[in-house]
Image (cartoon, rainbow, N blue to C red; front, side, top):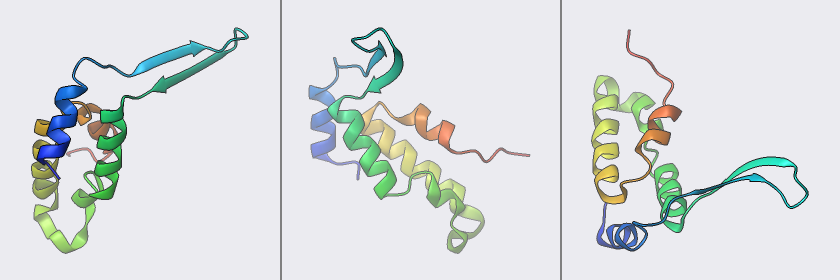
Length: 95
């Protein structure tokens, strides 16, 4: 997952930021976020590899969250964009 192609995309997309469109052409509030190509690819890969879901897989036992944290750490080091949305998606809270 954390590979050369994704890192290359991250380097070329470094100056881009997702854009917020608050209003449409008729003045109606729309609040839509237009992600960059890197964000779209990172989202696709995060879902495909279950970066949040793997923390809850029973077959991984009590170490499931450690494995998930490892995946997210490696993923974030390559794409540098999607860590906060992933963390916000994970609703499990420590006691």
